[in-house]
Image (cartoon, rainbow, N blue to C red; front, side, top):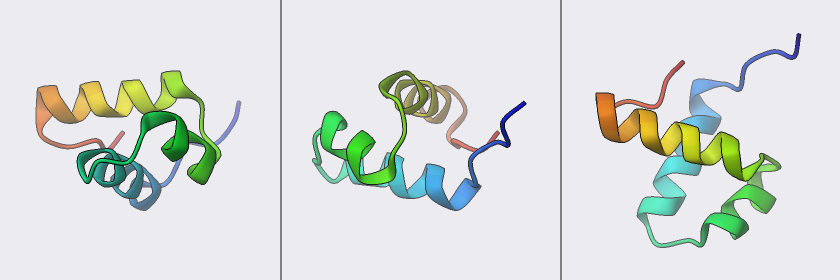
Length: 52
């Protein structure tokens, strides 16, 4: 099983989207899949935090 992404990486990616970076660009920048990013954004919206 792959290890989870760090909380720091999650926050940086979510904050980049909030700053206006494109989602595709953020995925390329942090080398994550779009589904991963969308999951973090959804979790952040629902709970106020993107941590695992």
